[in-house]
Image (cartoon, rainbow, N blue to C red; front, top):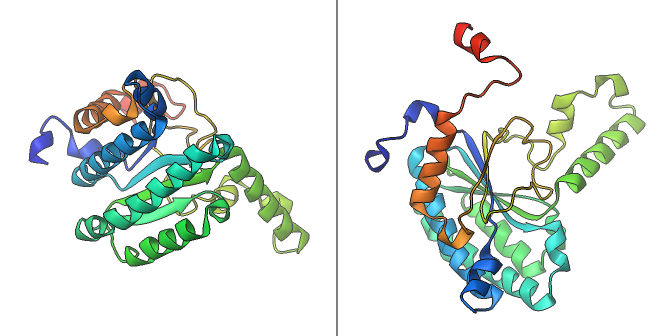
Length: 248
């Protein structure tokens, strides 16, 4: 961590989640098609993944494609799927070399068959890695995730395998896409917008949220390190007062 001496290694967030916003507007400002911005955004992904692994962050969740993004023009959706597949193929060796394990959350069955196949191959190939978990949110929507969890729990109750009175927060969390992963400590949204956009609605209840004006293609090492430093300057209270935390 020599290149990040200002960061306190004892206060690294376990899980950082990022809404990677601003690719299209970044490209439009340069009089380029939106896919030009998405391609530039891939370079930010590569750099942020490298820094996250170097810092010892356990999980990095990237909002790569939302359930609402299917409504975009067909040419843009097709281009994004092609970029995703290319990224997975090109980055596999780097993930293996850097001990990164790939994971995905979302309605993956909506993805094109060839993308599903490439995803499955990359997930299997990196399954033994025990470093950073790179968790891609693909065809993901927070409300749909919670709805499907409730449906699965309802079927368990209907089958007599679970009583309604036994349903608690842990049971719900165990039926979300993200089951087994820690909740985000820090949620970053780039691009200057200040909303969650249906991202990790359940999991982010106590996350520190940082809204950055930096467009995602420009969100590189320095911007990510600044976000971690901002996180470390905050006092996480979880409903308690500052005095309680200091004396407890």
